[in-house]
Length: 114
Length: 112
Image (cartoon, rainbow over all chains, first blue to last red; front, side, top):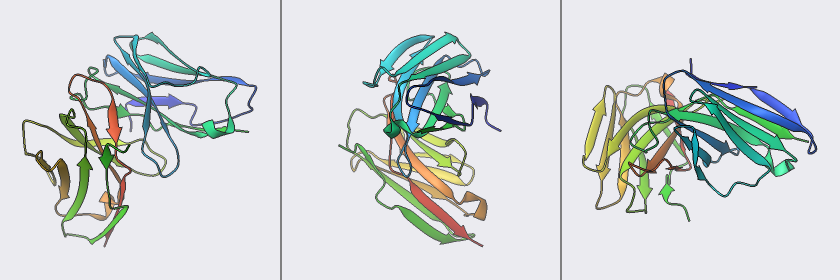
């Protein structure tokens, strides 16, 4: 069982919809991450939150909007997505923000844009 | 520019034998390296890591070797078990920097 919980597991939305992905961890980790993974490709970093502040944005389009309401929760708000945004969205957390702290992943949200 | 490369898309081994997965990197700023295992419909699971001050780290059946001069690391699994069949990702990053860069992954199949 993963200690990082992501909801929903699957999401289908139209290009004009607004939806949110949710990620939760209760390991006391202070760094949280969003990754995007396309089929047969490695995960690609989107955002890093360190101590609830956005520390890295990998030039992600503004139609993706992250939010960290508290140290246990991470959201990804979606608006006006494109078909090419269909992918597996993975959340991860680590004790601290450095690569020296292994990241623990959730099982992801499979997103399909119609 | 692919900074972390896993040149073997797949590897097939017999149960009980050794599995060796390889990874090469180009960025000299990387000082921490990790291996993840991924089953279908699950997120990556952390397996083992190594910092650049070491050349070997062992955890049970899993050993990671780092050759800094060659910018190469490998994961050895001994003995291999059918449950080890999964996609294995190599990842690299800086100790104080949150970004991990992943390789393309190697599909390991362990035959009974």
